Each structure stands twice: as C-alpha cells, then as structure tokens.
Amino acid sequence: MDALARLIHMARPQVGLDLRCQLSGAFELPHTAAPEGVAPFHLVLAGSCRIESSGGLLTARAGDFILFPRGGESRICDDGAQGAQGVTKMRRDGMLPLRRVGEFPGQYRRRHGGPSR
Image (cartoon, rainbow, N blue to C red):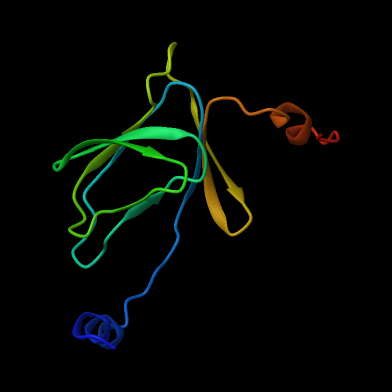
C-alpha cells in the first residue's frame, strides 16, 4: 500500500447519496457551495450535460464522475437542447428523493397506475 492509499484508509472517508436526478430537454440546475468537509459529486449514468464551476466548463457524458473536492458552487445544464426549460418536480423514489426535469417515456402510465412498457 502506497502512502496516499494509506492516508485515505486512515481518514476513513464516508460516501452518502442524497439525491437522484433524471434530466431531459432544456434544464439548468444551480448547486450552492457545500459545507466544509463535504465534497459533492455528479455521476452521469446516461446522455450528456454541461457542468460549470469556478474551474471552467466541461461536457460530461455517460460514465463520467465529477468530484468537487473543495465543495464549490456549480451549475448543471443541458448540452444544447432547444425549447423552454422543463418544470422541476420532486418526489420520493425508493431510498432517494428524485428530481425530474422534462418528460420521460411511460411517465403518464406509471403515474396513473397503468402498465408501463
């Protein structure tokens, strides 16, 4: 074990998930600075988005993990979608709150109790 791995092991960092987002169409979500000792992150599971922070602007794609070790402010926005910004809706989805922006196939049927395909 090298010195860095040993230091990380001794620090015993903890990871917690607090919110799951499903974003579609035009969106822009600001994130305020995190408290000291908290390093927020974004994990892109599908599609792409732009993330703006004090470090600049980057395009994140499926599989990208973006860590903000100093907890600074950031903004996530669509990757050039046209049209009006979607409405943000919050709900519980299993263990995590779910933030949804945009429309998703099958959303109407599931919300109203019908079968989804």
